[in-house]
Image: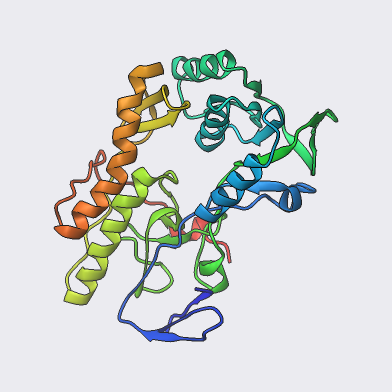
Length: 316
């Protein structure tokens, strides 16, 4: 979709097909290609945010010599998991963190991640930032040139421009501003879900952990609008963040319900069952809900969120 209309139609790219609706749900997800602000990134770095990206990347890696060095840019869960998976396959990997690695983890959990990376010969440049990407190297902000046969870009998430291009109120990243029912503050017939939503200007962390319950809540809001009843307000809690470290290890940072890091973490092989359960549950939970609507339980937050005035976060 290229534009969400405030009339009764939604327009789709190329076909110019419009569909009549009483309420529209916007859940276009999150992804960010390598930024044009970093010279060479868009031309030479491989993104990994879509299935098609991963397929092309796998082909490119398979064509490399076994000892060719691969540079992974990004110190969040995606960058760490990508670097770890490649290292687990025996690849030479450099991980450029761009700042604090695994920034939402408490220090003990971070140490377990770093320990695994170091013990598996991953070159970790935690504070380094990439200033330019070449076909066979990257230049860091301090001028250092790192040779590498292939660069993978995992730094940061973004959302498509659908809401902004449609003239709807969005936050600084382009997420649709909504109230606590996930209804757009600019059009009560448009409902947002997942990474593309910014409820009360306070979006939840971009993750499958938030996306699934947000999708369910958006569906409930649509059904309530159709039935003429009052939609419920958002109440979603977090459990933690898991990072796979190859096939035989993982780091899990448990959180409070408001997504702030708690004291408990699991590392090494002890984290694997939790990480696998979370990954499998993301798929099986959706299948279960599809077969029997209402069967998927949602972990609740600490109570109603405190909304910000939407006007404080509006950009157009």
